[in-house]
Amino acid sequence: MSEEATWTYTNEVGRYDVALLSGSGKEAFNLLLEVNDEIQTFRKRTAVLQAAAVQLNSVIQDGLTEEALIEATVIDDNDDEVSKTKEN
Figure (cartoon, rainbow, N blue to C red):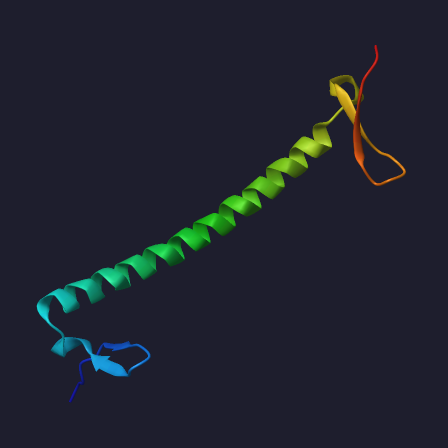
């Protein structure tokens, strides 16, 4: 004997059987499931893109040369950034 999974919706009032909701309630619940799945997909995709950005910045950092430097950033005694243009 197999039992079918019962979907429930929970809020601050209690737990509800989704099968007994109105037609629009059931439709909204199904859409909410899809939205939550997409949110998880976007979170995973964002993590992958952030890791790619870190790696790409690392590659750029490794490729920086003195010849390409236009303006140097110097920290003064007050921990303020001061830009200093490179003089040729």
